[in-house]
Image (spheres, helix red, strand yellow):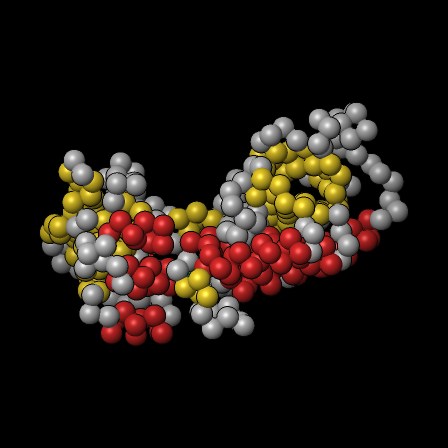
Length: 324
Ligand code: NAP
């Protein structure tokens, strides 16, 4: 247990929110560690182009996330590659348990664990994941050069990924369950103008079909008429939203009906010193710039929280001897 540590702040998650929090926390002189189970940079690293992060007219998601990481490193933020398995709140300190067995004792915690792609839950989706079913066009689009694919969804992600795939694939269908997109108007206009893309309105997938070489088609249904038909396809890209990754949110913290954590305007939960930011937090819009702004808000609030706690006796909830 020699690598257990005592911190002012533990940040869980290394996307734009977590890294921004880390930058602000280091500048506020908080003893901080950021724990990320995968690669630091977050979901944005999977995006093809980002065109709405201020200061960057157009930048690849990979480059933008690399810049966030570089910035955090320049601030000497300690980053640990590990999985947080539990956050145990205490009256003076919280404990953060890691998969490796380490335990961090900290005054404050910022949870920035984001979300994971939502699934359709139809036959064939799980079976053919990686064999033509994908949740990431930037990762898998390469395999569909000059092929025919379908994108499911009508939000910004589906629109952006369909436009990306349209540069690679021979034909891109977009199946959307309604007769209007919720994606931003600029993306809608680009879709309209792209002759490689055909939108199937009011259409849902009911089954993904495959042969020995992977996905070969899908069964579709027109939800107005009930008419069913099959389409020959080489791949199915599903972008129907995200579910928040809230598995380590301590019990007692309020979540809304969709599982997003409810915070105050400081991003603080009902448990003092535990903050939630980015896509895990209930909010009007989920954008990179908002995740970054959340990170700033929570880190400044955590710094204030820690300052208020300074001078209090070092009451420790940890098992005896753990932090000697
Ligand atoms: P989203 O905005 O929640 O859109 C999900 C889409 O999937 C909706 O069109 C929804 O249809 C459809 N859908 C949901 N469940 C479905 C189901 N079971 N079957 C068929 N269709 C289903 O999710 P998102 O596009 O991933 O975006 C998430 C957040 O990130 C949004 O706030 C978005 O603005 C943001 N984002 C921003 C950018 C950017 O600004 N560059 C890029 C990507 C994402 P309905 O429309 O009928 O509900």
